[in-house]
Every structure is written in structure tokens, then in C-alpha cells.
Image (cartoon, rainbow, N blue to C red):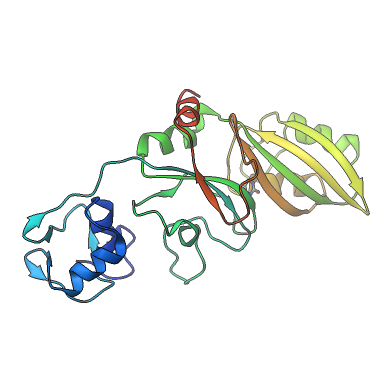
Length: 244
Ligand code: URA
């Protein structure tokens, strides 16, 4: 059994549910009834965490194993949520938005706390690796509201690549959608994913990013998933992403 703060730990009732044995509510009942043992000891309190790799969980005397089922979620992340499985400072994380999934999913890549939009979560390491490995260079599209009137020179710099402190960005697709009251709306597609890359690119050409939303990863669009909600990716969508 693990300390609350350990990242790999999962709540006992969630672990039992992910083994397909019972709903979480039923799992809580089983725990309260003293029917659950962790490493040979009966556990009656709720909220105990276990490590799926090392702890042995028994229900009614039978050792259980979590389901190997793979999950692929598409979340529309709101601003104000950190992309991590746990945060030492107690800030809100994207995990709170997918709380209704019993499997131990985790985010694929990262969006800044202030950035909204498309974020995948999965429990499939191969899928996460395919999408995040720099060698695959998967295209990501962002919608940007930037301060100021963006002139062709600034837009062309973004297209050709801009020198940031630690690297020069590769060529990008950039489209000015419109300008309204000193705010430029721009669509940008990049194939890299360095820390705060889009914000830093715009700052480098003199325009602060006021709002940022990821709208597409490879062929998959954010679509009309409401802010803060998620949907399962379809099998065909997962297959398309794995082929990129
Ligand atoms: N670029 C950024 O600046 N922030 C993000 O969250 C993603 C891309």
C-alpha cells in the first residue's frame, strides 16, 4: 500500500472496478464488508491506495488483476487545469475531468495550464509514445488570439521559423483569420512540441498570446466536445493515429 502522494497509486475501489469485478460503489461496499485484502491484510477503510504493479489485492479470497483493456480519450481541456497525473501544490489537474474512467489513464503530451483544447489521455504506452515521439513530427493545429495587428512580416517569420533561446522552430503553416479591436486571430500548425512553443513563437515576433486552443492533432479534430468534457476515440481514429 502506498502513501497518498505517490503518483502510481490507485484507489482500491477504482482498482477493483478496473478489474471488471464490480462498480466502484459496489467495490466500496465490499471493502466496508471486510471482503477485500491487500497483501494479505483486510482493509475496511475507504480511500486506501494500492500500487497495481506490486500490491496483491484479493476480493472474497480471490486475487484480482486489473483489466488490460485499453482506453483512448479525447478531452477538451479548459484553462486552469495542469496536465499531469498529480500536482504537489494541490492545483487542479486534468485527471479530475476524467474521474469517471476506472482505468489508470494519463495525458499524452502536455498543454499549458492556461491553454485549452484537444488533449488525449490513454493507458496505452505505445499509443502515447507514437504521438509524442519527436521523430514522428505529428502536426498539431492551434487557434491563437494574439495582441496587436499582425503584419505579413511577423506571419512570415512564424512560417519560416523563429529563433527562440534554445532552438529555431521548423517551418509552420500560418493563416491570419482576422483582426478585430487590436487582436489578431491566427491558425498555426506545427510539427514540434517544445515547452510553451506557440506562446514563445508569437512573443518572439512581438505579439503576446492572449488565448490559445489546440484544435487538431494529426487527422483528429477537437470537434464539438464541450469544454471540460471528453469522449472515447473511435477504433478507426486510434488506428489512424497509430499509423502516423
Ligand atoms: N504551445 C504552447 O505555447 N502552449 C501549449 O500548451 C501548447 C503549445
